[in-house]
Length: 231
Image (cartoon, rainbow, N blue to C red):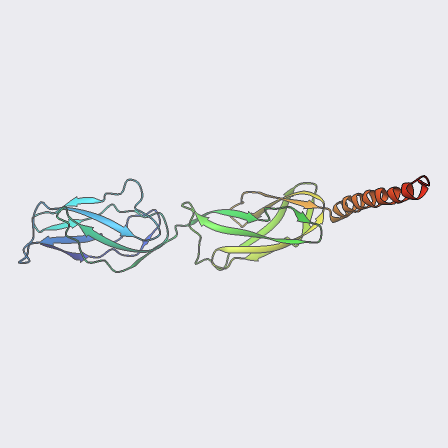
């Protein structure tokens, strides 16, 4: 027996049914269709079939099994293979592309550690669909980075056009305190990122104070030794 492709899977979009529909035929050794065979579809790629997908179908009189409810939520390249309980496998299908669904959010990240005044860090705004896929074909959306609240501040916040769905903005610490940053385009407002700006002057003063105290102790020790005439 063998399994052959009648219709291979076609390009799809995340969250939607795979086009085709993918259809295979189970045949005996002479090429005759086998009715009532059970066929299971599997996939190889960055994701797995979404919950609710129908992975097992039976063949009809023509020996064919059509998979009309296969959904992939993760964008990327995939190949398909079908099999029956007799461990008969179809050839691997050609590779298909599952594209991201429509954009639905902006995810802001970066600048996760303290930022010294006059130092810099990079914020990244990623345009994603509802399934967390990056809109890699988007090279035109303008994303604006701006301070939403906080006593601290950074310089360098501006509008950036995404490349492959991602916009990056390098900012510099300006005023000590917490600066809450958000990114937005004409449709969506991102999550917030809190950038804690630390004054280097405070750090230097702390270091100097400690050094002075240590030096003073050394001086006092020398004076005591000098004044101890009795040995």
